[in-house]
Image (cartoon, rainbow, N blue to C red; front, side, top):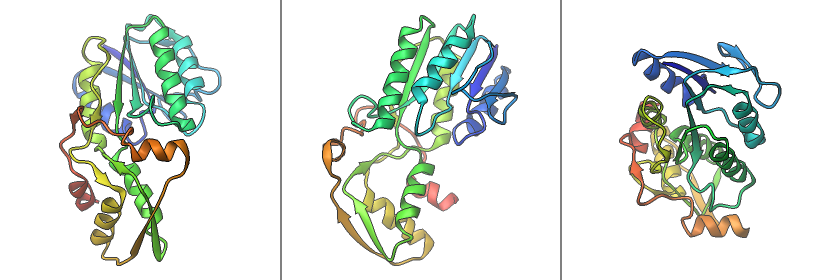
Length: 233
């Protein structure tokens, strides 16, 4: 089986690519510094593979990149896309591009699988680390279900090696937290003491987060906890 993975050198890709190779698949990484050097926002060379796993993403242009990649596919029998829980419910520009990417995949005519996942532990850590640099830590009022990238990689590996399944069950972490709990857990591990102050999130996005529209309480859960992730760091 020939598999092309975009973003194979990123947070998720560096866990997924070895799993696919261990299965015996021939894996080619497409990224700015991969086996195929390519910027998906520019010209994409023809992609000839059995399966394409699209992980690459950024704060802007995900929908454009996805459409460019789809247009370059030649004879692809399975297109696997990683999206984000809340893509259709939280009104943020970045999430709108994820939803537009999902819609492009669904309309492409290529058999597909779409998995929505929660924010990775790594992203949650970046968020709380940035907040904790301040002597008084402002903590937006929101809940998160951070999931370990290794759990997402394991799920994606199974999906990529299987049959196209359409939109599959969301994957989140084993527990949901107030952001303040994540901050306190980080401060404890770092041996720091900070005063935390809750702040409201304004606008429609704030309302969506307060309503828990970024959560997937009925979805599948990963195994590795936030506490285990922090301890491992």
